[in-house]
Image 1 (cartoon, rainbow, N blue to C red):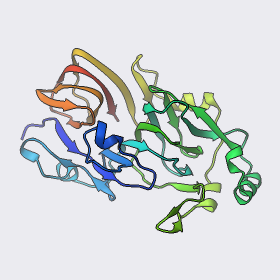
Image 2 (image 1 turned 180 degrees about the vertical axis):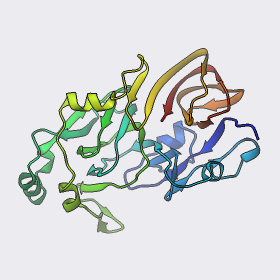
Image 3 (image 1 turned 90 degrees about the horizontal axis):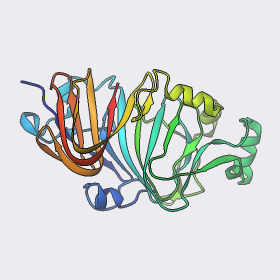
Image 4 (image 1 turned 120 degrees about the vertical axis):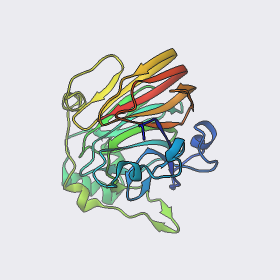
Length: 287
């Protein structure tokens, strides 16, 4: 069977801090959705193909394996603050798609990491004073290497491209309760992996494989992400091993198929040049 663009059904997650924008604006099921996993081959969620001869099959069935898939891509709607966290084995990046006026997120620490001081701040409830809160606006990009303390805050909708890992060490969760109990924290594990980064070090990691072009948002050994604005028509070359296309604004067609805000397509190598038409903004990910 000839390879063709595969339209993927998102795996939607309802988490305590989720909002309703993904249902209202990105064509997901209505109700509270925190995360829509737009490209995922992971034990906690695998996309199902929606179009063509393979409709109804899992993406892993097409690939022939559930193991070693390199990336996971999500749309995330934060109606409340996410926990302060750090990843031991995952590098990721955020593209701010929308946000409320005055929205901020946590991006590292104000000063160099001091474990004793951090633990003391957790104990006495002043840990927020150690965090670097950064204002955000649509179009901003944040590259987050493994070991960087971070958190999305209230009123932000993002596209997240990450290594295919869902391991998160939750350091602080604002004393929230879920089902009447505090959410699990992983303070000891987090203390072992928190790292300090200068802005220059993060930029070097973000573009370790070169800066690409004006549309390149990141180009590291794990993934390359470009933002493509289509105003009329454009084309994507056949790329190995695959290309992910996610529409984050507008609508049009992809190789003749309708594509709207929130749609995700997986372009396997061998499907040839992909022609895009319409007025839309796309996140293009390759590895």
